[in-house]
Length: 333
Image (cartoon, rainbow, N blue to C red; front, side, top):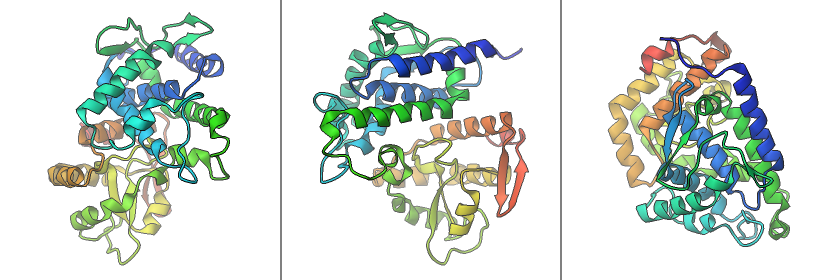
């Protein structure tokens, strides 16, 4: 049976409408930006590469909001937190300040209520007119359904959409008058969305134990300065999920950079998570570290599928790369 793929015209129109929404939509807070990125992320984690619709729960959307805003709730400079609203501080900043990554049910419910009342029904409104090109919203129920073709476009153009939205998000935060006395010369983009927000040293003890202090890639001993590497690179999908991390030599990590690793490395990663997944999960829970093995695998499938479609190269070792192919499918089946 042929896979239902949106037409090229549909895909182009999708990108144009996202651009139109960012250019002419009303953004008195950053909630709409967070919602767009959330819909793109959940399409990667819960969706497939076809033109089907996708039902998403408001609770899952709320959890993504908490992840996105948790780092933003930290002081930016002089002990002051950046405003995410043109008037008073966005409620989610206060809500997420002490919750992530525990995700208490009452906090998720509170954020879900906020999401449901404001950005969900306002996102697709431009100049007072609603264009439901992403999802139909009735204001009732605890789910929304991305319309046919939308999930596919969010998955295919995830990096483009995320880049556009984050650029506008940064500009929006800069535009708020209440942030004038807070903003300094630091790179605002890195503070809001950079990988340095997470303290990756918290993963070193676990990974050293699992890997017997050997580099995940070259399998040689690590004598000093171990690097915690995002197996699926941060640049391709910027989230810190525990099962995605591996320990590597600085040289291997720097050589791999933002590339996906070869299928041989992918097999080792999948086997490690299969053998030690429960042990890793216990460690993450004890240390309040974000993790979700099912989502990590879903993200890996998406990343390798994208690499195959774009004929990207895969990293084997220093100065050695190979062309991507469909061998990853048998590993992540």
